[in-house]
Image (tube, rainbow, N blue to C red; front, side):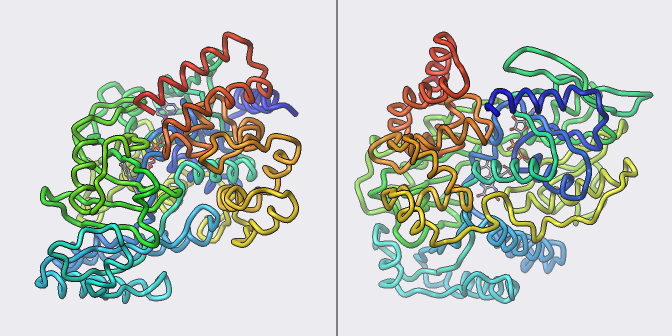
Length: 540
Ligand SMILES: Cc1cc2nc3c(=O)[nH]c(=O)nc-3n(C[C@H](O)[C@H](O)[C@H](O)COP(=O)(O)OP(=O)(O)OC[C@H]3O[C@@H](n4cnc5c(N)ncnc54)[C@H](O)[C@@H]3O)c2cc1C
């Protein structure tokens, strides 16, 4: 079946008039995580995303699976059980994700340089406590490093004033690809998910929420979908949906922007990431190896809601300045290969009764109408947030559901993933080494299907300097719901996130390949090129 017919089929399901158990609004980490959880419990699930899957905050993160080390200080300082529980939860979620999406995640060494001897006992004792709490969830022991060892792990680091370093481990992942893996896992379990479909009104029966009016942004068509429970998983836009439910609904969110810049691969720290827990103005700074480039983040500034936030020049200058402070190389502005901004939903639960609820960084609340809102939190704990949300919906709507099984559920592409699978791709399909490695890590046990497309002739690189190939465009259009060229450039592949110029060069080829597959006419091709270039010019 063609990609267009596939989409038409899905939309027909959403328009069929059937009442679903759950309607999930929002196709980021939270919404797609909920769809996986609910569908694998046997519930009927509809999910709508008004842009592309992961086009919101979920493709704009630092891509770290935090084991909750930041809650540890509060747990110790305040001798607080609640924060301790959060550390344990985050450690457990980090472990689950590393196991369930092994193709898209990995262990990453992080080194914090120490410039004052007085800091050593404090930082070291904290990390040893973290090791102890990690127990069987540990992914490697933390270690105090000498000055020489620190510089060996981070050869680019400035040596001035450096006394020692501390090494610890966290997880790293490919955020947009993980949303795609969640979307496909949910679909495999029977959920109906569609992107480019907006919920633009909330429906009520006798004052109770009963569904939403949906709007297909590609065709303009509108219709109603009914569900026994409706979940608002729209991240930074959660207040907007709450107000569609009840105009006077109180805001529960403030929004802040966090930007990243990506530096040329010559600045990539080879074996470890650099973590500065507190810069001189109190922010956390990361310089991480990611997709063969150096990812530098992040900032935290009050921001306005925007579907395509643009990184402020002042924030770019701040990151560049701080990268220069810690790295010895002379980094030029032209070394910035890409930049993007994401909006953090900072949630406050107006009904929180105790410190446990306040300490959480996600909020799960039910409006008078029954609309369930889940927002805030972090990528690392999306699975737990999903489990709690579905538990709530099951109870609220008295649904008959099986127990949650996502803790050990392998996600799409991860089930038969072989870390050494690139060798098979090299042998059977004659791919170049870096391309084979890239396909194996990106698609896991599905890499063979992309390689088969390459064998049919779609085997050229999208850009000479990068491992992404034409076959991925075809696969994205056929199997992964890519509807715009920029979806492929920014979220099915990460090309636009690591090298904007390369993405610009690749755009015409991506448009041409998608045009054939999705039957675009000349006008649509022009519109697609313009859209891709517009996004690549500033606000991804
Ligand atoms: C700079 C930054 C760095 C971060 N780094 C990390 C990190 O390293 N590790 C970590 O664990 N977490 C990190 N986070 C947090 C993490 O990214 C978020 O917690 C997570 O992505 C939120 O996912 P979400 O699905 O709730 O929101 P989103 O990803 O924003 O998804 C909400 C979706 O709802 C859609 N939507 C909105 N309105 C409608 C509508 N009316 N109809 C249909 N769809 C709609 C939007 O288009 C969007 O796609 C970071 C966040 C930021 C901003």
